[in-house]
Amino acid sequence: MGVTGKLEVEVDIKASGDVFHELFGSRPHDVSNFTPDVIHGCDHHEGELGQVGSVIEWEYTVGGKKGVAKELVELVDEEKKIIRLKVIDGDILKDYKSMTVTIHVVPQGDFDAIKWEIDFERFDDFGPYPTDFMDAAIKVTRDIEAHHLNE
Image 1: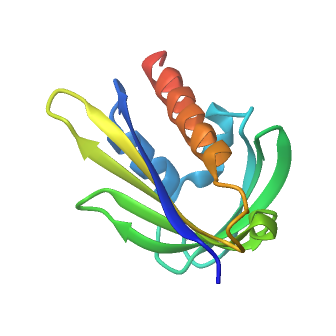
Image 2: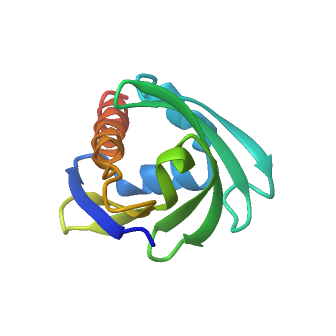
Image 3: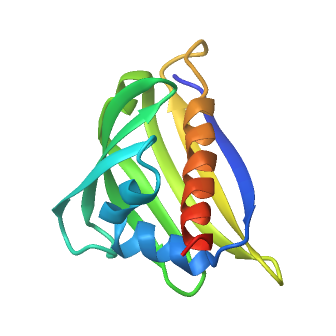
């Protein structure tokens, strides 16, 4: 049996959190326009974008390594501004038995925060923790924020 875990980070932003929810929910193909060093592309494979059950595939560079990840949209909550994506295929599953990423817009009064959660299961006690993925999530957040603040 592997080891399960969760990494979380909350990144305060000056841009509207609605932008993040819309991008990852219904316009994931635009994410690479704002953060090309991390996300190189996104293809829609099945289902309706922004809806539970749709499948998207990301091309990315994390920790200096290029990879692909096919993800199933498990949750889209418009009211709470939460999106949950489960990795169903790709390079990530070489190092992890499972991985799910949740992106949640958290209102903070005068500003918003983007909360990233990575739930994972390692194959064994000695596998890697997905800290490189969390670092990439923070960079993606900052890149999207910077783009929208400069509009």
